[in-house]
Image 1: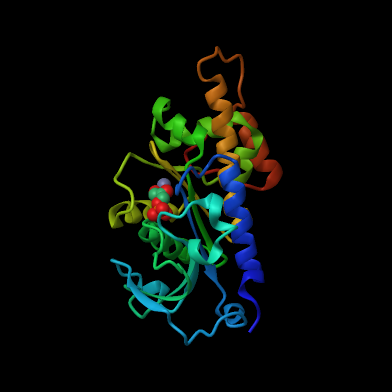
Image 2 (image 1 turned 60 degrees about the horizontal axis):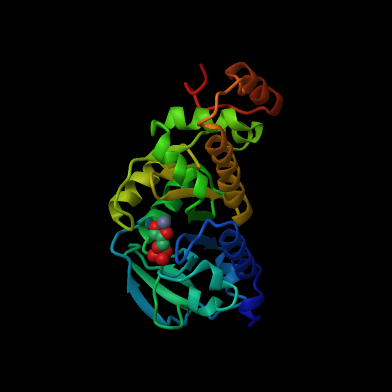
Length: 270
Ligand code: 13P
Ligand code: ZN
């Protein structure tokens, strides 16, 4: 067996959580990440027949039966993951119906997976249906995106258009736009279902007055999506109260789309 603390997926998770903490996206235990693992790769580091304990998930995810995930633990601080990975993180395998998680590694103080596991697993399942490369669901509380949900219309077309107008990269990296959910109680199956529904056709979902979810084929991809949206929101929050002389027009957004072969979400450009 190889040393799991050197496994690329674990090293990248430690680096990502540390980065997110330093960016101010993850105060206290704010935020959570799940990473779909390759079983053959995981088998180089762990005895996959050795189950430490079983934990009910509280919902069914049959589409993910047998799949393994590296996930952050509930109540764990992102700032500490790099110093105490075996306590802050866990590796789970879902049993047949997805209603039970087998802990294969981690959560060494007896802890458990993030309270947002419903949203993570339901979003993985929704994305895998449309993108077989899907591996990461990442949630955090970036300051400007959350601030924007207090002063901007929560209509997701309007919200997306504003972000696209703030900097050229926004439409380049999320031409599918941003889904927006109204404020809801977090950590529930209900918010999980609502988020996953939006994930069918977008890779970013804002939770009003709470945070954002980003998904992708890698930690970098999901991180980069959130980073780009947060940059757009930061510009908006800097200028929202000032008189605007100009912004990126729909005609210019169409030019960007044509130049990079992108298809902006239907009906979002005038
Ligand atoms: P967890 O500590 O359970 O992951 O919750 C943090 C969070 O951001 C809830 O939305
Ligand atoms: Zn949160």
